[in-house]
Image 1 (cartoon, helix red, strand yellow):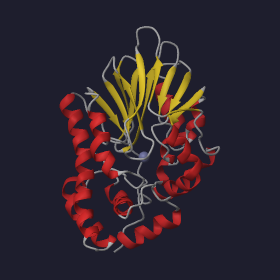
Image 2: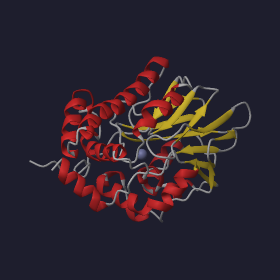
Image 3: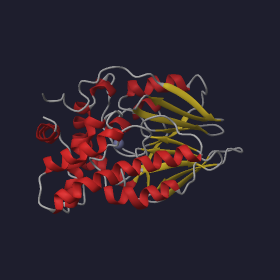
Amino acid sequence: MSKPFASSADMEEKDETLEVLADGVYALTAEGDPNVGAIEGEDFIVAFEARATPKAASDWLEKLREHTDKPIKYLVLSHYHAVRVLGASAFGAQSIIAHENTKKLIVERGKEDWDSEFGRMPRLFREPEGIPGLTHPDITFSDRLEINLGGDRGDLILQYCGRGHTAGDIVAWLPKHRILFAGDLVEAQAALYTGDAFHMDWSTDTLDRVKAFEAEMVIGGRGYVPKGRREVDAAIEQTRGFLTGMREHVKPIHDKGGTLKEAFEATHEALAPQFGEWPIFEHCLPFNVQRLWDEYDGTDWPRIWTMERDREVWRQLQG
Ligand SMILES: [Zn+2]
């Protein structure tokens, strides 16, 4: 029997929890749905991630407004994926900040990605008709950008750690509280999506740089908020384990001239015992294996996912 496409059959609303991680530091987690956050400056807010639609963003802001009514000056996008950026208009931010590669990727494939993600995860797109169009950042950087939060709140440091989940992921680091917003570079007990990823870079240097912050808390792209060095490192290593597990099972089959389907089945069998029950595992794995296969074929820049290509890969591997 074939499995329903991606997360198209997952229509059950998740419980959302706003956590105050430190004075003026907020995270909203949602049982494996994309996480978002906010950091309070002396007289403004920096929001981290925008969610899939203005309605979904407004639902988050309503919860945030129970804690602070400061205006949102900056909206920071960790990367270009539609479910992270298309709600941007709800924030009324003065500026939208992202990595320079994120800006390029939105121009190159933002529309295709929107259609693809809408088809894969329709539940996240609350009132999709409210999306005014693509989200284009107006402040970009290549390596590092610091925002002074004012008063004695210290700096918020936006840092590029190398290619990973996409070509343009950034993290947000609060040295004062040792809290790291990692976007989709780290997941905490949620499966990884690697369909636009650079598996070799991500599983080595990029995660090493993320780990080097020695954070006391990390807000990953999905899943709960690990607290304390041991839990933080465990989440980072579990993310790495997912990636190295994929590499170990796809490469030998690619090397010996096997098929994509064989690589998918071997990877599924190897990863399912540890990761199979986590959110979006079945949804992501076909796209993940296809992208890793492309990397072993020598395709450095990820191919663009379209609704048609999504369905074709799904039919081939999960059908
Ligand atoms: Zn993503």
